Image (tube, rainbow, N blue to C red):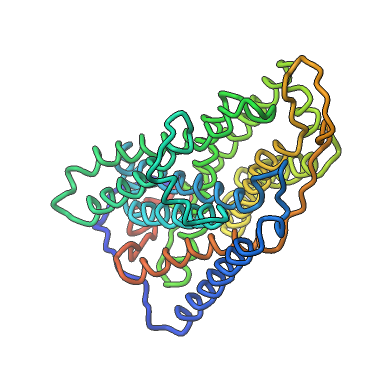
Length: 411
C-alpha cells in the first residue's frame, strides 16, 4: 500500500484560455444554455400543458435535473471538508476546485428550478413573503446562504493570511451543506399527503446521496480538467477519491434498503411499496434496473473488483453510472411518488369521479429535457469560465508531488 512521506508546496494556475478548443467548448455550452432558455420561454408562453406534467404530476423531469444538481452541489464540497475540517492534507490541493464545483452545480440547479416556475418573476414574491411553516421558505435562506458560505470559504483558501480561519469556516460550510441537504430531503419527508414520501429517513438518505452524487461529479470534473490542461494526476489521490465514493455508494444502497423495508412494515405505505418494487411499471424497471443494478451494484463491482479497481477507465465508468443511477433514483422518488394514486384518508373509504385509484400518466416532453440539460451546461460554463480566470487548479497532482512512496513490492 502506498504511503505519503511528505507534501510539497502546491502551486495553482488558471486554465489556458487562448486555445481553439477552449472557445469551442464554451461555444457548445453557450448553445446548450440558449436552448434551455428557449425551452423555458416556450413553456412559459404556451403553458405547462406542452410538458408532460399535469394536475397529478406537478414535478417532472426539470425537477429531477434541478434536485440532482442541488444535491450534488452539497456533496461536491466533500473534498474541501475532508481537507480542512478533518485535516486530511492529501485532499488540500483539491479544496479550491471542490468549492467552485459546489457553487457551479447549485447555480445550474437553481436556474432550472426558477425557469420551470412558469412565471420566474414570481420568484420575487417567494423571496419577499415567507411562510415559515413551509420548508420551501427555509430553502430560500439555505440556498442563498450556501453561496455566501462557500464564497467566504474560498476566500480563506485563496488568501494566505486568512489560512488560520479555514478550519472554522470549513466547519460552518460542512454544517450548512448538511442542513441544506436536510432541507431538500425534508421536502419529501414532511409531505404526508403522498405515501411514497412522509418518512423521516428521507433527510439522512438525501445527505448521503449528496455525498455520492457530488463526489462522482467531482472525480469526473477533476479527471477532465487534468486531461484537458495536461496536468499530472497521480493514482494515489485518484483512487483514494474512488474508494471514498465506493463507500458512499454502499451507504446509499443501505439507506434505500432501510427505507423500503421500514415502509413495508407500515400499512399505509404498503401500496406504494408494491407499486414501486413489484408493480411491473416503468418505475419498477427504473428502480431495479437503473437505480440498483446500473447505478449501485455495477459501480461497486467496478470499484472493488481486483481486475478493475485500479483502472482509470473503470473509475470514469463507475462515476458516470453513479450519476445515471442518481437520475433514476430521483425520478422514481419524485415522479413515481406522484404517479401512485393519492390516498386522501388512509384507512377510510372515499369516492369521487376524479382519478380515484388511477395511476397518473407522465411522458416527459423534449422541452423538459432541454431545460434540464441547459442547467447542466450553465454549471459547466460557470466552472470553465472560473477555471480560466482564477487559480483553482493545482499544477501537479502526481504521486511524486504528493510525496507518495510506492508499496515495497513495486520498488
